[in-house]
Image (cartoon, rainbow, N blue to C red; front, side, top):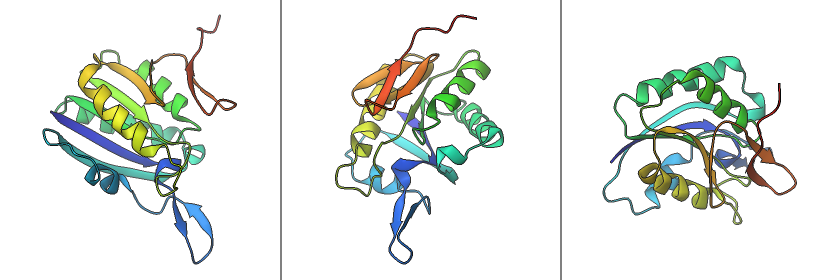
Length: 171
């Protein structure tokens, strides 16, 4: 199976700088995550495109993500996007509204704690996203914390520290 995995930064990829004590997006940890898993029959094309906290993302960044996803769908059976959880729902909604008929599952995942932290949820969420990529039909999804949520109307529940599906807003 061919999967394109796109890294955009976010909490999942934050690392600690011991020189200044900051926790920031310096470089992707995606290779470390992938190399720690047994994935004998997956061909993963990795693309690191943005190194930002998702709160710092703008419309231009989301346009870049959409362009890369459109490209990846031509040669992949699934696309997984490592994304910051604070604005994952905005990017997911944009992809849902802009990609009329996805050619494959497009999965957004991230973590509430950085991969480098002992109590991280990063490995669980990436592993779940990889499994979901095999099982889901074409569409836009958020996959983490043992949940698969189809867009639209996926929201971060800040009190629970996870994502939920909400009712459609009345217009």
